[in-house]
Amino acid sequence: MNISVLLYNIRSLHNVGSIFRTADGAGVKKLYLCGETGYPPREEISKTALGAEESVPWEYWIDPLECARHLKKKGIKLVALEQTKKSIDYRQFKSKDPICLVLGHEVTGVQDPMLRLCDSAIEIPMRGKKQSLNVAVAFGVAVYSLRIV
Image (cartoon, rainbow, N blue to C red):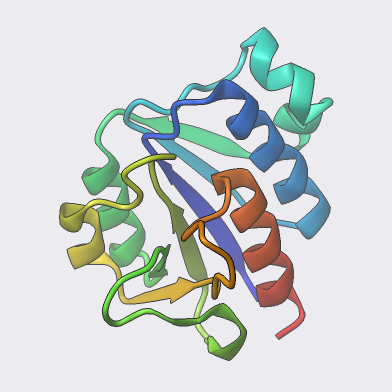
C-alpha cells in the first residue's frame, strides 16, 4: 500500500523523531509535517529518529488544511487515526488507493476542520481505562497493520 503521513500539530519533537524512525522501517513514502509540528534539523528529533530524518522524504507545510487539500487533489485518500463516531477498527480498513494517514495533536487529536477533509477514520480499540495511546505508538500499530493489507 502506498502510504504517506500528515502530522497535524504534533508538539513533541521526540514523538516526531519516533514517527520518522517508524516511517523508515515501515517504508512510508513521505511525511508531511504541518502547523505546530517541529521539523528537522532539531536535536530532539534526531535523538529518537536515529538518522531516519535523513532517509524519509518530508515537507513542512504551515497550513495543515492546505496540505490536506493538496493531497486530495493528487488523488490521495486521507485517513484519520482518530476515535470518531464513524471510525472503524484499524484492522478492518482496506484501500486500493494511495492513502495519507493523518495523525493529530497529542492531547486534542485530529480536530474537526481536518476530520471534515478526511475520507475515512480508523481507530485502535482500547481495552483499559485510558482511551488513547501515545501518538507515535499508535502510528506504529496502525502503519504496520496497513502495510500487511
